[in-house]
Length: 360
Ligand SMILES: *Cc1c(COP(=O)(O)O)cnc(C)c1O
Image 1 (tube, rainbow, N blue to C red):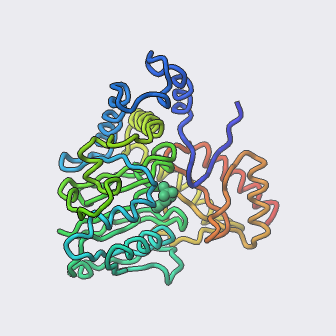
Image 2: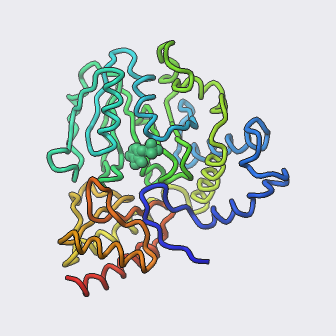
Image 3: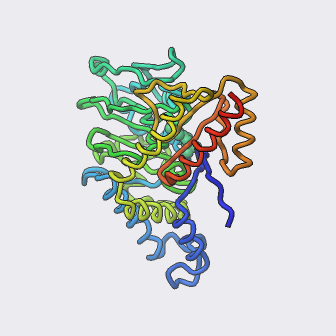
């Protein structure tokens, strides 16, 4: 069977064993005589999947009892609106750290609901780093602080999570959830679209401290209120059942790999292979400040747009897919999520080496 090395930023690579299990169970899930896709979300078989998925996520991320896991649709982008609708309650004011295209969208949506202070930004260095966050910035009366732990497009990540004290810290973890260990208690809310490190598109996971649920205005639409999901075990309406099922399989796969601790180690190894090559290359460079380099999304470039285009074209011919950088950044980007095997990264670097010799 022909499979490529898929470096897409999202939807992105899934573990092959997961895809095979999906295939095996597709027509007849656990002797039910039907596919998960055809099954009532009120059936015991599906409710079990929801519970197992939550339990696995809690186990893998070490999520404490006072948090809830919610399964929502609408992507991480809908959370840009749901977060302020649910959390901008006391002061109608939130602090955002601006680190790239996704934080920009989060800020724009929050501004429609209340007041936003951008307390730090890396815009001045074209988002190639993460700004210092001074804790005195939090002394104002704000409902929460919002960060983007990994900037998918720019290829940066927070090395340290800011301490926000009593103020809830909200994190968009769409592109690096489960890629490294995090202390959940530092966060009030974590959200992630599934299609990067969790499963297929259609599902958004929200991990929220219980005391932050239930204070949305009565005018808040039912489907935008976290309380609706919390009260109904994320089954108020039809959930993205197939996405939840595949996510469960991905979490089982991750557990079998040795959990987040082990996958984090591998992610460091994988990223180092590519960064070490970039730092020594006479053709390719990384635009990102070494301290803040992402483990998941690695942008790089050559000396010219022509060589970039040629590289992308040649790479595709050799089975390395979706290496084109985001249109806002240009160049190339290799997304090497949990499911990308180390062999894939090594093969890419070997190919880059050959290309460099020919074209420098
Ligand atoms: C992909 C991405 C989003 C948007 O996700 P959707 O599910 O497409 O809405 C938001 N934030 C980050 C960090 C992302 O990587």
